[in-house]
Image (cartoon, rainbow, N blue to C red; front, top):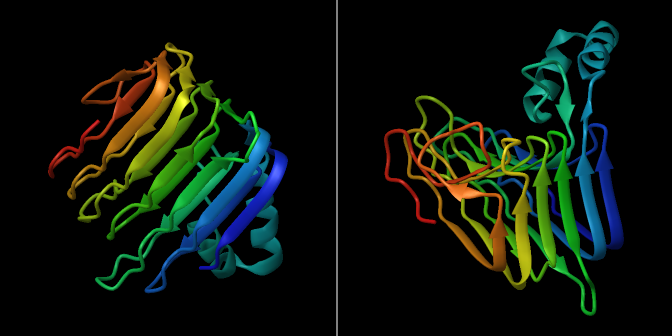
Length: 231
């Protein structure tokens, strides 16, 4: 896959808006790199996704749409598409390409806030290889609310992919979540090893490290059958 590079003051991904770098075979998924100075807001879902897929299926045929749905993210358990930033390696073969990497960096003299709300996601997912790495550098605030998540996972049943690493390098910043709204920072795996989560910040508010999923706001780096990662 190709790379995506964005430099901006403000970025908004809403109502199912996505940035996506994906690989479904031997090629590596691309990377996504963002430099911003003020705000990045990712929020809400596209509740009309299922209807749009139905319409496209009627227009273009099930085979084409089936391939497209395999690439599109979080289309859903409930027929909706989440707003977010996604990196995927979906290949199940031994030579499947690696998931890409993702970085958000505050621009010089910036005051950057990242807000995820109402089901928004930043997700690096792999089936067989190692999950992509997510890096957040020099941000002032990372705020999760309303069942939002930052994940680097390899959670396909029967596959030995390893979870990616998540790094927050923001010594003057705050990582914040509403504690009772099921927001998660996760580097999990199923049969492979869990990834590592490193948070260097002034404060972590509303999130707690847990070994298993809960209805609260969690930080998890675990594996069902492999070795747990470190937090």
